[in-house]
Image 1 (tube, one colour):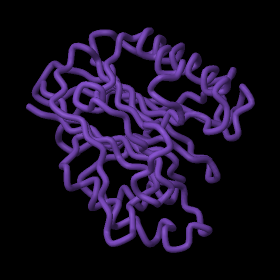
Image 2 (tube, helix red, strand yellow):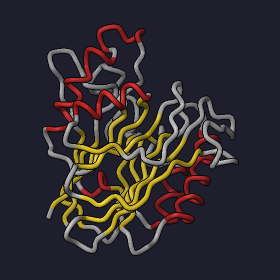
Image 3 (tube, rainbow, N blue to C red):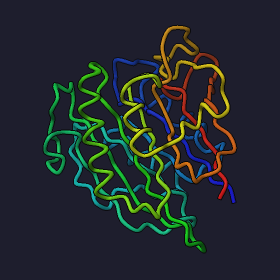
Amino acid sequence: MDLCLITCNIRFDNPADELNSWQYRRDFLTQTLLKYGPSIIATQEGRFHQLNELKVLLNDYDLSDYHRSWIGERMYPTIFLKQGQFEHLRSGDNWLSETPDVAGSISFGSTFPRLMTWCEVQVKNSDQKFMLIDTHLDHMKSLTREGQVEVLIQQIQKIWDPNSFLVIMGDFNDSPDSKVRELLTHEFHLTDAWKLFNSKEETSHHAFKGEMQNGSRIDWILTDPRLKVKSCIMDKSVDGEAYPTDHFPIVCTITL
């Protein structure tokens, strides 16, 4: 059995984006995500109204927000699960601050409050479980991101049952050679799915401009070493000059 996982920063609804604003690209984004038949979609940067619109468009997917009290102006990492494939066991949000249980809290000089969302699921008709983590780190300062990822690690240690496969996805706003990546992979012995299939790095944030030479792959899917990874690609869908979002989604297929 194969499971397809996608991580994608959907870009917050910003009218200043003009023809790249949410209303003009949400359908194309939906088409881009659905063409892979994913089992799990991890999004970042969506606001409440965007994610609810996406939930309607992704009508065969459940949004894992059972635990969440939404704050209208905040941007949320969010996990969508293909209906009929999983039993949803538990879920939660933790803010990447010195007070992770306080919604909207902020520390380490972060530009915005940042958080991780998580859910534990069991594959139907199977005893296999996954702990899925989706996160979005600060986009300005490396020291801020390092502080946030330390909180991320602490929170995962509290909630993760090692009998479940651990998968961490998100927009880390840092290169794969950063201390952030080193901390995560060292602590949990994770595999960067991209590096299994791609000898060179590429830029994943493109600001609606397409392929860029200067930049780094800031969007990652880190997988449990017990999982077999079949493929990992960067989706570069474009319709004329229109892109579904300002990041290239990362698409990974694993085999159970």
